[in-house]
Length: 266
Image 1 (cartoon, rainbow, N blue to C red):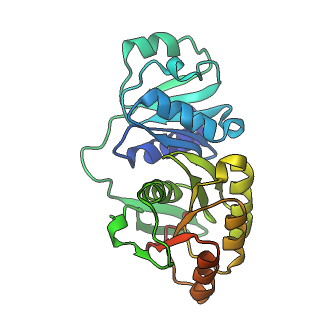
Image 2 (cartoon, rainbow, N blue to C red):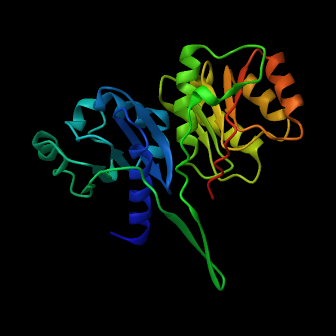
């Protein structure tokens, strides 16, 4: 395995390990281009691939539960570089070992909360901070618009918000039915990330929810989201133009919640 193989594999495992339900993700360049949770693992796997099937080609797949017969998900012939899981059923190994160019990795789940330090090298030294393991609850989020989210929207916002913390900022995540359907990552401005997420999602954007890892500095992001069919938004809040952003959401009958936490992954 190469240096980048380890980075991508670690990123994939960190994503799925953050979910309690059976989760599957597809990673490219340390960003999840596909992610889904579902009680049926093959279904989660299929949904993760379908979130962005173009980017998923040749990606790294991770599960947070024992790997089952992945071919039942309809993706057996789609090439992946690595598959990561805490364990593999024999039936799954019989199928997966036929993939001559795929590495199978087994990772032991941590016994408790992931606590540690995030260390980044800079010229002449290093930057050190605590890892982004902030305990959050949607019950603490604040509804700031006239319309409150539906139960289904709140469930998707919870999923999207957790996904957003694993994607490079500026981060925009679109989600529907506990599946990532579009994302924009690593862009120098947030409106471009919104544009990219909508372009990836295409028709799947309609009726989906949006999570932004940091506040919206201008209302143009909301206008673009509304045009794409977004129905609810979660973002940290804290901009000097929050009132304008909230007004734009109200104008388009979008439910908006402020989480009070910024992830901002670099």
